[in-house]
Image (cartoon, rainbow, N blue to C red; front, side):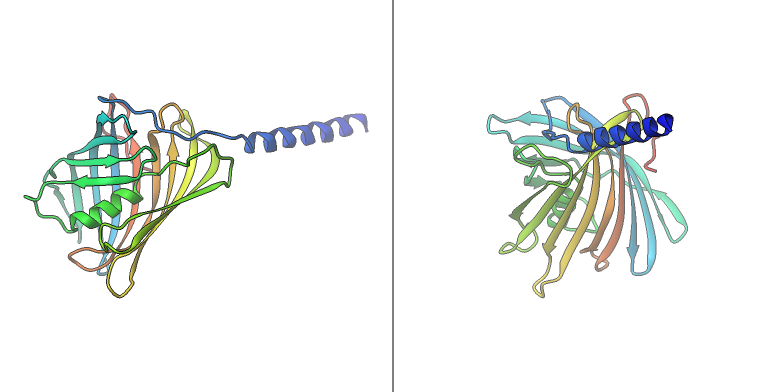
Amino acid sequence: MKRWLYLVAAACMAASVGRAQDETEVTIKKTQKAGDTVRYRLNATADVGGSEVIVERTVKFEIKQVKENGDVVATMSDQGGKINAMGQEMEVPLASVVTITTDKLGRIVKYQRGTDEISVMSPEVEQLLAMAQDYVLPEKPVKPKDTWQYEVANPVIKDKKVALKGTYLGMEKIEDTVTWKIKQTLTAVIDSEGGKMEAEMVFFADPADGTIVRAEGKLKNVPSQYGPVDIAWKAARLKADTSTATPK
């Protein structure tokens, strides 16, 4: 009987500790400086008019400047990839370098890419995708289930706003890293009839510097030259000595 009571007490203590850990308050931030680089393997599966198109790419992000007001200027460089459409696989031509400026909370304030290339999406829609594919920071420390939200300028419909909502879901171990788990939703009006693009993403961020270790989610009703498309999206941070990691 005593042993049974001891086991019950131990289990209750463990549950109590687990709850305490779950309620730990964290300050989510990104520690960035000029010269920092990180590479990702991206995987996107799109439903284009009922046909599945799979795109895999490797991209490199580099911090170019951190301004006194907290704005961060970064570039995204395409390092190659492939596309599979209707059973046919081919190499994807390298896209031009994209320059993205974000404010101190990670909200995009400027998006620039070359105009000398063919793209299935306008630069304005690409900016919406970039908003969906990185998380914005809360302005104060958060506990699990705490939320934060912002309205930012809509690059597609100028008199409308983009709604971003983040939720902290606690800590989760991804490979060898204990990460912050963050869910983020995006809603944006994309046409004069009030049609909306929506995204729901989950990010696993490294507390050491705030970089994304892994991310995944879905985007719905994304405007393209082929009409609206739905996209399942994944990203995995690559180690410095490899270029073959694939999102799982």
